[in-house]
Image (cartoon, rainbow, N blue to C red; front, side, top):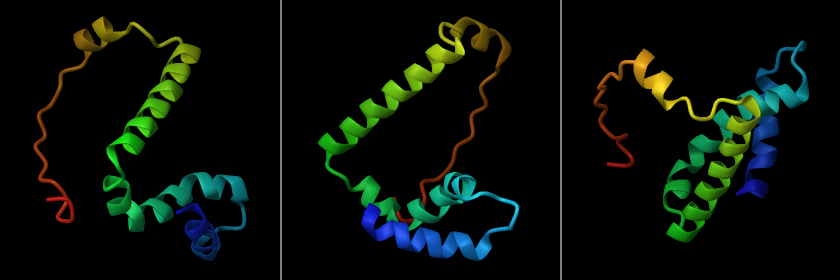
Length: 96
């Protein structure tokens, strides 16, 4: 997928690029929007083992970030300060 995405990303991003925005910033901000859309179905259809491995990697990255930001063990504070809102959303048409 990556080999397929890189040329398309550069072509699409640089057509929309204001001169003041740097290349790395464009890739971070716009890259995800442009790349993921056409491949959403492929991501959803990945084998369970691959999705599990990706999920584990994301969990590890978020755990590291939370540890560095010192925001662990804040469930009690969140539960006290935040009232959850039930917002039922229908699944996207392509995934229903």
